[in-house]
Image (cartoon, rainbow over all chains, first blue to last red; front, side, top):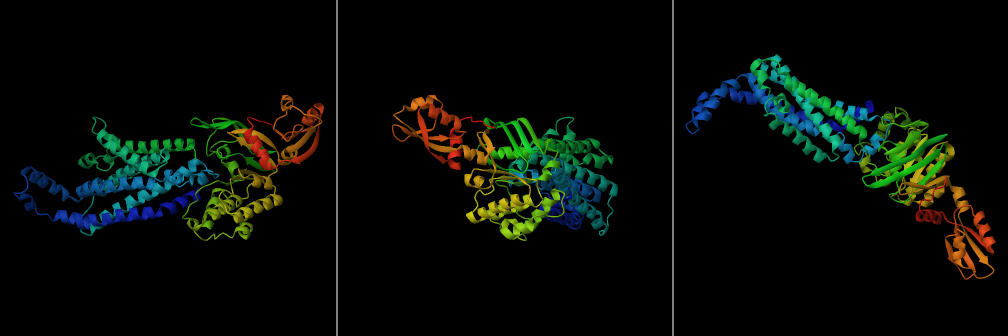
Length: 258
Length: 299
């Protein structure tokens, strides 16, 4: 198992470094530049007669909220930056797990060794999940550190719970991608299929009572921010997606022929 | 003891039947030649044995035990040189050897010095810099480095230049002579099989045509010239079950025989003929005979 993990670490290290630096770089810019800019916007800016009245009203209503550091982190970091990066990197990091081995024909070598298919899948999942978690957690905890230097006080409870949602959302994205990587031998096709599956959950979430189905909810947890209470359905849905996708991947992999 | 047994194994890919009730027994210590034309089902058989694909029906015993996809213990005793597989190009030669050893749960590599004396691979270099022949040799390093009891070679010399090919075959012969290792040698190159194998199975369209010791097959395969005292009608000989007849003149014929010839010689003598010449057939002739004949099964 350790040999497999070492191989996966080596194979994914470059992708991880790029991903980590991109997320870290964004985190560095978010508070000192992004928040500072928003906080310095004078309200008169929105009294420009060239801007339609309804838009002025909306911008004026939103500005005080954006000047709240906790709302800013929730809307900009979790709801925008992390949502985009995590879905993108979650797919990129995971899509090669099995499809990559099949595409480059190393699957014949790997799957003819005396290791179980469960171990092979598990080692890949461990490495991909670990890299994704590191890429989300470290830059997110950098935000309160950078805020302290301004100084601003970030509500750590909100940040921790938001982070939990984001981690589950990212891992669910990765798990869906692993499932498609097991199903489809071509990496490009698997990538499109995974993107399509994730995107399809967004309109499905508009159906009454189906709000929980979209992974996006795990990042834009407005309901949680408004009430301060944990909103469980998306979380349970995310964990369910992870368990289902990985279990299905294993059973497909067991039957897969190389 | 048999290293492995396949009993009535069948496998289809869509409408194509790759294996058709294939029954095969490979005894311990043999150098088993697995012959057949392209598409005969050789690679499919090997992949089934390694659980890379699953049979539709039939049973497979490996080292006396039924094999299962997640029961990988027995696979520790197998070394496999595939027809073609991509190794991890970013790894070095040493890197893949150690990675493979790790998967086998072994810390020490065996045979590497001996292999290096023969192939001189740049093991510190990345695999991406290796030529096709070097990658093939590296596959042999990987297969032998864990000390296997069964070495499965799937077209091991395919696409190799004559120098590397000879080195590889010579190494295998030496390996077999030194150690009691079973080799399952799949190939369509007859000269190689003839050179190193002691037992041969010939398959066609997923069906075994013959499984026999190579010497015995060759012993029974002869070209005999028979002469009759007077003119004879070929149809009379054919009626007695004598086939593969080539007419030389009105009373002289050449016959190609692939089984024990005593019964046929007796029939010829009964018809008034005598054997005037007996020449052993080449292995190529034997192979071609089985390729032409349909559904010949001798065990």
